Figure 1 (cartoon, rainbow, N blue to C red):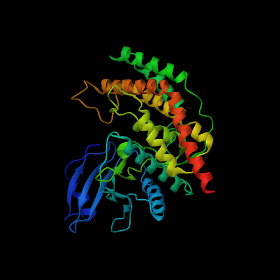
Figure 2: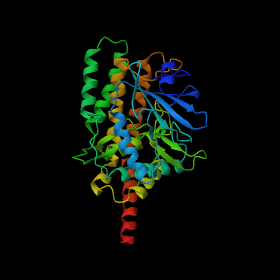
Figure 3: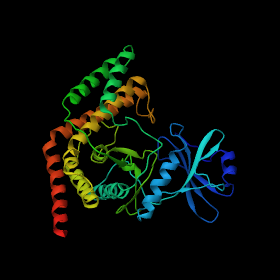
Figure 4: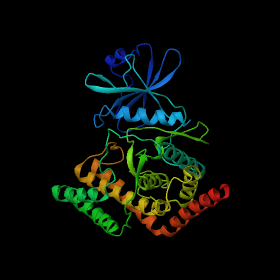
Length: 357
């Protein structure tokens, strides 16, 4: 969602920001965001929340961030308005303010140190929120329902059989269905509190990039099998190329560092069965995302179509689809090495735990 350089004047007045300065923040595809600098130099983030989220989303964020803060985990915090409201309805739009976390974000991991830091941060987050008893108002139903996404792809192929790109998309879809037919079973997995979108751009690093400071963009908080969260993170982190570049590959070196960092901080959080299912979860999420992008290539939906590089939203989504298909092949070809790194991380942690007992 694009944002102008200055928010609506009614918003500025309603929130008492008339003396502040504003800078549009380019990061994020869903909510429009601005960096706000108050007269005293305080920096905060102002967001116009996408209507796909209920206003109660801020209640979920408030509960989780207060919990994280109580354990000394750095996190953005909601800033109530003058009347104490977390959500502010102005001109039929929902607005909110958050504390600003200084640092740097990246679109992909640049080295193994960053990967280890990202893994450690996610492990710390999971461990901290695991003891929180909260029923989320924003229930993201079937966000990682692989069967549903494959069914949606089949439906898109039938609905758009006269689409100008149908032959190209069908070719991609057949490859996806082939990959899906060989997916290993995840079985029944316990649901835990997760971030919901742990891509690398949602991690703030210190300015010198040596420390992963915190997770941002908390609209996706909820309950989900934790192996799917870890699988999604590794799918995102371990491909050193952009998501719409077709030369995708799964980096074992990045994965080794990420899972090692995660194991160090998650400690005994995950069961042995959950650890064992991480490789299958990585592949499952990758194939699922390929199916989503492939359906979008026919439905002509894309949050961030780049008209300078792609002739249409469909062609952009086809590139994203091919990227995930190639990544899935790379994961499959290295399955044994991925399993070995998971086992090594688990055993290293297990041995350390026994040593301290």
